[in-house]
Amino acid sequence: MFKFVDEYRDKDLCRRLAEGIIGISKKPFTIMEVCGGHTMSIRKNGIHKLIGSNIKLVSGPGCPVCVTSQKDIDKAIALARLNNVVVCTFGDMVDVPGTSVTLAEVKAEKGNVRVVYSVQDVLSFAKNEPDKHFVFIGIGFETTAPTIAAAIMQAKAEKIKNFSVLALNKTMPAALKAVLEDKDAKINALISPGHVSTITGTGIYKFIVDDLRISCCVAGFEPADILRAIYLLAELRENNKVSLINAYERAVKENGNEKAKYIMYEVFDSADAEWRGFGVIPASGLRIRKEFADLDAEKIFKIDVGASKEIKGCICGDILRGIKEPKNCKLFGQKCTPMKPQGACMVSSEGTCAAWYKYGE
Amino acid sequence: MCWSVPGKIINIKGKTAEVEVSGIVKNISLDLLKEASRGDYVLVHAGYAIQKVDEADAKFTIEFFNNKGKNV
Image (cartoon, rainbow over all chains, first blue to last red; front, side, top):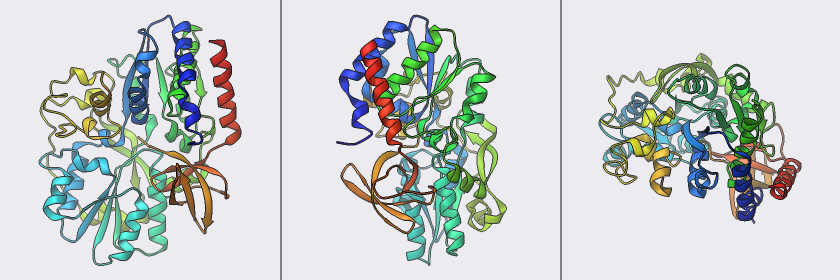
């Protein structure tokens, strides 16, 4: 028994919830699931096929690998090409095509790219191999950023000099604003990211409900969690109401994780960030503060990657904005497959194209 | 985006907990939590516990499902 997981995968319960959604939902309705984890769970469990034809589920910009810009991918690759530097990264990043190569190809050529589960692993490398400099590629949203901040503080406290971070972390609010204010993306409601919310709390979505008049429901990742969120959003829609609901009570508190937020903003400042498909979004990223400049790979290595180029025909950007689907891409399933990915959304284990390819339309 | 899984704390040494997730035991940092104790369930993400899983709230959610399950 996998506690707090198996209970929310009960088939009979999911079937009854899906029937309930079909029973109450009459108006056409487009819901964006922001998080790539939700996209994967929806496709894997076939939820989009259980809830009737008038509810459309659209993927959003919530896959940290997918939204990493081509320029930032090229920066990671440039670092990996330096002598005596070992680039450490979460696994999905190694196969994302840069302008000329991938990190996996640099790894094969020079052997100085390592895949890690946690930034803690990188601190261990740095302690055990003092002759090399270890750079961690810091991607991820508010869920992951505090773990990286905690590691930076630990490195400072323990005077680990051969460790630094390429800070590419991003934050949700400004990006959600950019998505929802995009006239091409006709979104009626959001399934809000569950694990970002364990850190931030639910308050970050208030402006979406109050100012943009779009309902938000924070959801867990099991099928019954997602069906429940859709059910609650459909109820609001049918009653012409707009509201913010927390349907992931077991993990998300209204104020989130105060200690994690404190640590995050001890190390990072909010900053403009470049997102694949969106360009630069003001105040949507995190930059290492000057007190920790000796742990900031951008400051230590002064990387200049020149002009970055995306792969011709790749529409990952439009998919991340929720205005296109993988089936609209000429490369999808032909030139672009998990074995030979052309775009980040096919590489990432939370990418929309990867989900469509693995579990079908 | 931010895969996290619930696991049970089976032992704590300083700022590190041994957390059992579906039969596998991993050393997880408690740096991001104000406090945690043996027997607590926590959400594990990238080597860190990011939140305690609230057992009472989990029961509440299950009751929601069972009620909604009946009404629909």
